[in-house]
Image (cartoon, rainbow, N blue to C red; front, side, top):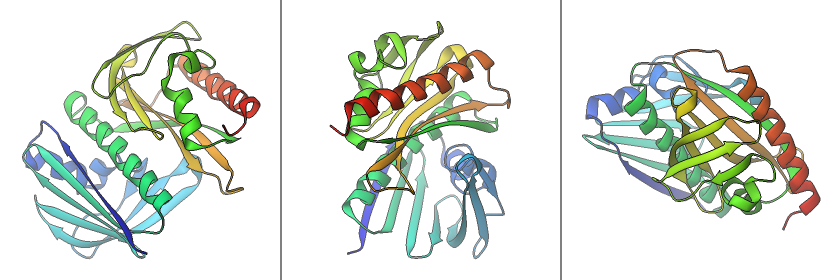
Length: 258
């Protein structure tokens, strides 16, 4: 069965601003892949890469209507992006299962939260991504509980505070002594979370899980930290996030796949 999803988001930006984010290699690297090379034009090809995870995808530009619509294809997978003043819409076709449908819906919703944050706070700056990964036997839903609930966050990331509804203010004291104040950019039930981090130059943190290449029962816990304009990640928080995801792996391993 050919599954498909559509994700829409209102964003306070012009059609041309949204088009630059969706139809240039520089723009796509601000919210989609960590590295994008190639030109976006009718019939062209791009390479989208996530170097930390060893992933690289060759993408064909199947349709290109400037300031209106662009369609990207990878094999039987097809992504159509439509932009207008104040709105962006994504339709992803060629998904293979209900689980992939749910995962991609969450991934695109979260990515659009990152796109919006970049446009509003860092409109002309390059994004740099730092990943923290930990394999563990768990489920997306159980990991999500530990991404969002105060009592679960305190076991690995915080000493107080939590992450609540999308669009709300987020205030947390982090385990290594830093403070995090920001906004919840995305909160997809049972899946992914994205928040901004005012104290670290209005950067962003995304918490999510990926299928593991080693086992259908295993997931990769992932934190992606995005900083704009400069490529250096503060050492204290880098070490803090690395230790935090290792703690989360141990917490979930002890708890099992609840």
